[in-house]
Length: 120
Image (cartoon, rainbow, N blue to C red; front, side, top):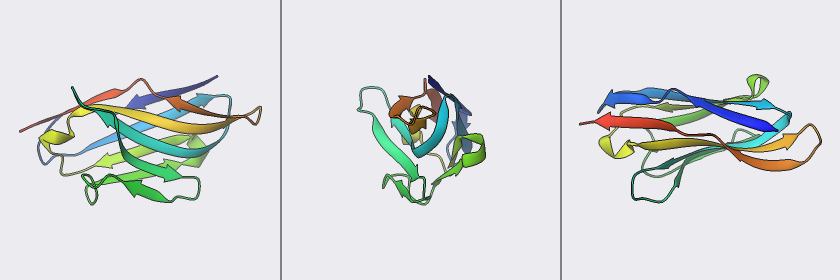
């Protein structure tokens, strides 16, 4: 069993910054890819940023140049640095990981979500 726990959400004024973190624990052998998704009220969940085991990254057009995803393989952790936040960034942010367990089987896991609210 693998658990993902997010932290770092909160309330910030427009133009401010937040740093989200997500840590994986449990039967983790390796993590092939991480992703951050978000879901605003009344909208579909969307990919915000992703990073592979080879450190290739991709971002939603709406966050390019403002957000940065990074990973710490030794700690099985991923971060999302969010700068120049806008009210439209308000959403619940979810961590996603493609995990190879210590039984050498691959699964996809989700965190419980963390609220990010940007006030104007």
